[in-house]
Amino acid sequence: MNSPSRPRSRPAPDIAFVLPSGGSGGAVQVGILLAALEAGIRPDLLVGSSVGALNAAYLATDPSVERVAGLAEIWQGLGRGDVFGSNHWYTVRRLAMRHDHIFSPAPLRSLIARFCPLERLEDARVPVQVVTTDLDHGVARWWSRGAASEVLYAAACLPGLFPPAHLDGHRHVDGGVLEPVPVGRALDLDAATVYVLGEQAGPEAESSRPRTALDVLIRSFDISRYARLPEPGAMGRPGQRVVTLPGAATTGIAITDFTHTARLITESYEASRRFLAGRGYQGGLWDGGASGHGDAARRAKSSTWRAISDLDNLEAVVVSPSR
Image (cartoon, rainbow, N blue to C red):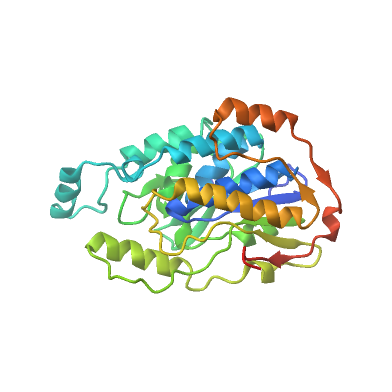
């Protein structure tokens, strides 16, 4: 069942990480997570939408640099086929038979199993909140309990591309349809400081027109997600702060294009590391995974962090890497 709006069994979180939707751009979150955790910033709550829900579920089992180094390895091995599959005949057959989806859900479900070893969301070490879009009622639904694999599939199944999930007797699709950047949820749960992982902006004009029906569908979805997106920094409430951690620019990168992953992780790590260092937080240096997961873990264990200024001195900001 979906979670209540304000769980009473836990105290209000001090720090929440918000992991937005974004398809292949979810790689940006990996670099930002590395920088934040190296700087000693640990979440008490994870709020995820679409691909951000998958990253959140992975981190929720162990919010450490070692864990994120493993997440980076998964991301750097991903290709379009790992999400959408490579069976073109299946796609053609589905289109011809007028089904409610284009791609087989099998590759996405297999990927979710790699991202989340949990059987149930409530077993996570760090509380995680996942959003889905209820097709039958046209509203966003929030989940902190339930079968992890099913909820995460519902959270990430792009409408029209994958078959809807069935939860609590209703059809559900990608949470990014209604909540691409779920800052409001973290604020509603009384988080004192909300870190948004990456700047969010609607897609700019494309240099070339979409070539296929699928391209048109994905482009339209990308536009609709951010049509009415408020500036996260303006959403702060009395006693609460919203801080956007900068990442690499994803302009011009399709949500199905995984060929830029290594660059997005590295540039996002560097951008957030500089941002945090400028505000008093210092962490170690990540080498882009060149030395392997084991070395990343050893570096993480030996890293020391120093906060020159207290978190209370950090104001609510939305910062671009160029600023």
